[in-house]
Length: 368
Ligand code: IPM
Ligand code: MG
Image 1: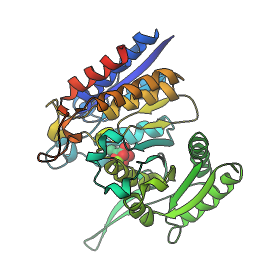
Image 2 (image 1 turned 120 degrees about the vertical axis):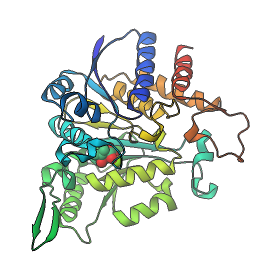
Image 3 (image 1 turned 45 degrees about the horizontal axis):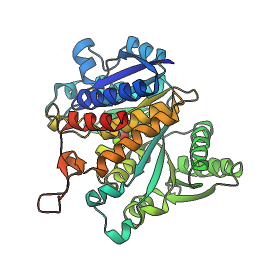
Image 4 (image 1 turned 90 degrees about the horizontal axis):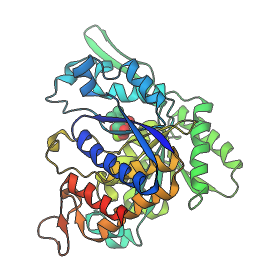
């Protein structure tokens, strides 16, 4: 089969991590007899520089025409980059939010898994880690605070800013259904996270999740307040299977979950709509401080490419081949800087490599 992949390199470390994921996808498709065509799409700061806006209509059309889109990361350092002198709706992040909305990508899946080989990079104590943990955060991605009406007004010399948090029951239901479907293929437990002791939107969230849960008698469902969840993620991450939550809570909790696994450089993500289409990107940012230095960890992007094969192209064996190759490379002791134990800790048997070499090593494993 031939598949059409849109590719958004973006800014900062984006181009170099995407290059490795591209390499790995080509490698696995060659091994299994598939063909990929690639269409480069501009988004973020690079699009501002080239076209004056973070996402053009043409870029949206290109993404819509693809079977799936692979993405790096967008944005720069707000303290120094001229992109952040622009009004908010013309900054790099606005491009990503617009793309998610235009493509209806309401369900963001962010798996957080502790590799046994990376126990050293996990900041938690051994007794907390136990046999490791394995969870998926299902984050609502096109509603809530990030898409609500926003205003900044001035009255009598006093500025007031307002953001609004709105959810309809339909928006809640469709992402809840997705989370329960994911749980059904895993350990069959959904933890729905909200702030129902304060927010109306959370009380509606809880009600709708309870209704959806009735259709999944084989999946257990519990509710947890977001502040408690932030604590439980470091106190006992093993308790989680699928965490279902709204946009902003998911943004925050997924960064926390990634650090608990050792590094944000390991965390992949898939943003899905009602069709097979998906946008696949690492959960981490563009890390402008290390851009172009060949030190960024490409594994999150490579694992996102595996998710692309699984969810958009239905190529599960090929996805597993990538995931196994990543495990094999880690087992061989190959590490990028972010997952290397600190100097002074035990580094025996480990070898530090750059971004490109990590991609090459993973390809070598696939070819075997
Ligand atoms: C993420 C990022 C984005 C988000 C930003 C860049 C708008 O933090 O994907 O988690 O908040 O959704
Ligand atoms: Mg985020």
